[in-house]
Amino acid sequence: MPRRASIAGGADARGPEEAGNGRAILTDFRMANETVETPVATSDDDGVWITTPDGERVPNYEGSFPTITEGEVVHGTVVRVDKDEVLVDIGYKSEGVIPVAELSIRRSVNPADEVNVGDEVDALVLTKEDADGRLILSKKRARFELAWKQIESAAESGKPVDGRVIEVVKGGLILDLGVRGFLPASLVDIRRVQDLEEFLHRELRCKVIELNRSRNNVVLSRRAVLEDERKEQRQAILDRLAPGDVVEGTISNIVDFGAFVDLDGMDGLIHISELSWTHVNHPSEVLEIGQPVKVKVLDIDRDRQRISLGFKQTQSDPWQHVLETYNQGDVVEGRVTKVVTFGAFVEILPGVEGLVHISELAAHHVENPREVVSQNDAVKVKIIEVDAERRRLSLSLKRVEDGAPVRSADGGGAPQLDLSEDVFGGAAPTAAEDAIAPHGEESGDGVAEAALAEEAAVTTATPEETQGEPTVLAEAADEPPAEPEPAPEAEVTPPVADEDETA
Image 1 (cartoon, rainbow, N blue to C red):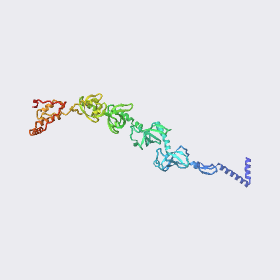
Image 2 (tube, rainbow, N blue to C red):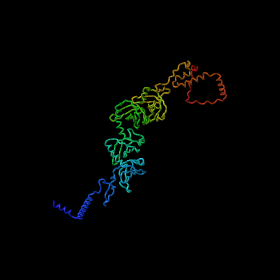
Image 3 (tube, helix red, strand yellow):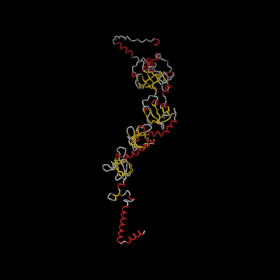
Image 4 (cartoon, one colour):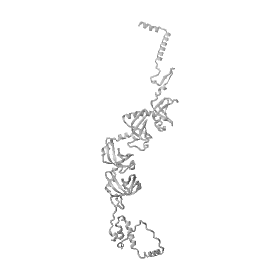
């Protein structure tokens, strides 16, 4: 303590000049300490100001820009749209440039159709600084990266994805999913679509059925979505129908082997053999797409969810009409529909044809059926056999007798006039009628009328009409007689009528 006092006292005992110098040294020491302890920048200025190596404080421009890397997806606002590029402000030191080829997965697009000024877009950084110092971005690749993740997730979960049809290509459609997705034509709808152009620019919901990142390949199916939506409806249809039911539907598609019928949510097949009672070369001869039809359920495969239908079963069976109307031995009229090497087919009713074998075409030997008949000829044929089980008719052309009555389609034969004797006035048959009547070969009405007319001409001739005959004979007698010509050897002298018959 005394020492401290002495020191203090000594200090105080110093002169004014020495004391002043001591205070100045302490002041400089404190100032030096304060300079060393002062920070470079305050907490309010972190990242805004920096100190250069020369000790100068300048604004931190680089720190105010976001840090970006190539391959990163950034968000920005469209500030200008040109015909070949789009400028986007992403908060960087310069605007990013999106070339027109990087705007959309569609080809040959107009930038004004894709974006407008003020739109917010996502873009992928292709190059931070190209040869011209520009930041190059890609809108379509940013969409691709974002969309691919969604597509992968949808493919794993089985959820559908939505996309707009942007192109119609050979074999299907191209959808814009952020990725180019291919939708095959066979998977566009439950039934095959004839015109794919009607789907252009439409939004479709599809399922992802194939995915390949290395090839950027995405295959879609809209049919799978529609089938899922109709699954319950299909089951209800299967539960409701039974073989033998007659239902109504619409022709949805026609193929070589038959026609498909839309039964209000489920398609059934009419095989070509079930379209008509007659032969059908192609289903389009009988039906057309969109035509409403009434069909009969023939069979139902509930495990495979397939329905077999028949169209001809709802139509009248012409064969049944044949069995009810015609009998063996009837003569009917028909039309030759086809001439083949072994005979000719004749249609006697719409949808019913019979075969005239080559041996039944004529009484003489026939080498080629076309020597006797041609296609579309109208003929009369005789039914010689009816095979009800095999639904076949055997016909004959040579067995048709002249004047045989023709059986009509309504079951009637030749018309019966039933004329009474009053029509003829009770006249007795003449000699000409007696001479003709026993021979059935010429019993036609025309021959009888000719005979009656000839008899009338002989019996009604008056003497005045025959006066010219002697004159003619006299003139002939004045001429020199001609030498008689020898009679032909084969000539047969007609029999001389008896006197009783002449009388």
